[in-house]
Image (cartoon, rainbow, N blue to C red; front, side, top):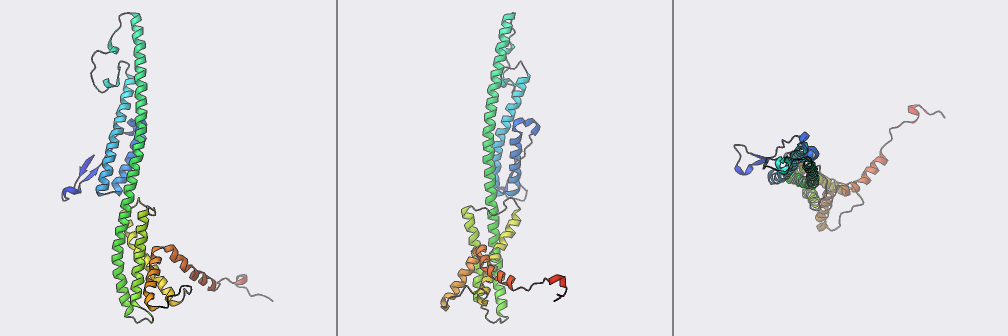
Length: 320
């Protein structure tokens, strides 16, 4: 693992980068683990930043070091099996190679046969014990790889939600200013029955309802985002989420005021009208499904009253 830093960046902007240079052909039974860690590394490198990325990278580095040690043990075991003069795996790593049991030359045939049998038994025991330890180590490494993958996925999910939330904050500012400008413009057009205060109320209430809906989903861990996508795309989607809520709120306000939604009646008390429309607009922004269900009767009515464009008998006159 190495740390990269641009020469114009401050010291706290260091970006740790993890590079895996292990040949999969030499990894043997651990090749799948190495490939799995490489996929996690690419995912973290592309979708994470800051402290989240540093934490995941260091965890991957620690787990990969253990996998590489397992690969070393596997290669040492292969060398041990290929060289009949080795008595233990320690000799493969260049440790003490002084006179050992395997290097003692027997003086007669009986001793030679006894030493050969004892040596073969010793080598078989060493091989079985080493294979058992490597198998157990690979199982533990598989569990650690699953934990690292889950850690990276949760970090990516948090980053995606944060990018979406930042986009919403930018959107609420931009579209609130746009809504105020639009309401001011419509107030100068002198539209009969148009109330600029109510328009701005339902516009802002719908946008706030959309933001509260997203925050509620975040707090409950509800998954609705494509986490493994560009953060810029998620920020753009987040920017338009308040606008969608505001449009639903304004649409319901216009539908009630125009009398199209006759099953929703504003309160008779004039003091409660403001709160009524603010609440309706907030519900529209909070739940798009609820707003769609309210607007369904309008769609059904339009489909029933639409004239049929089909002609009988392909346009031929009917003969009595």
